Image (cartoon, rainbow, N blue to C red; front, side, top):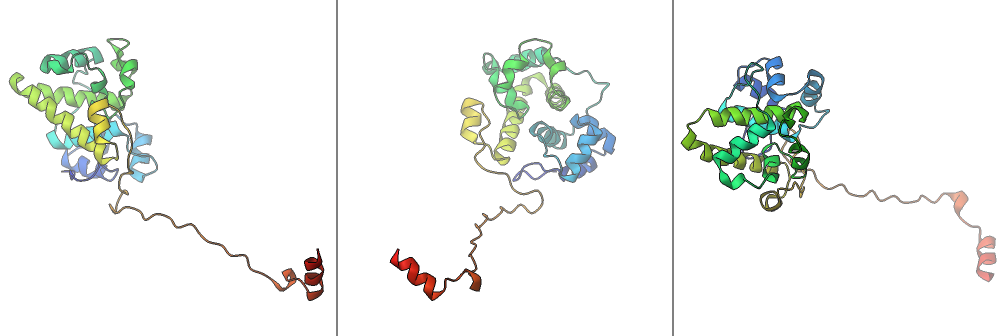
Length: 218
């Protein structure tokens, strides 16, 4: 399990792979990450995108396998399915963005076309597929509670990444208020002290008594 008191780290890729009994290629597929980007994530060259962090958290939490053989819903189908589960989501398209770790402004682009899922990055499409599979794995009368649990899990992950919780819940906006903890140690870095430099006075820079007297007459 990935600890719930810290954000998902790049180092959790290996633990997620072990927890899911997946190969490296399988995990790349599940997270929707290209091999070259996966290597950059593992090595710390590239920061873990919010959608990938959420997908890893959901996969490890629920153990839902993601396969290319399983049908991926369109964005329109996904939205209609969510709104059938909970009518409170109707008329609130901005809320959908947080399910994928994005800001509310993203939904203006997403919902221009009902089949817009193909226009989404693969990382977001995989995140959507994991949520879709999870909600279909529970009885219909339990889906509203499952949706609420996923939504809260995603909110907590974004808060751990340093985003303001009130703005997330009330405005569906990602506003960063703090940097998340360093990758390995978990300790906050101490503020850097500004170096104070002193100018060294060399003998050649000192004025002779004659020059000092001449300068004082001016």
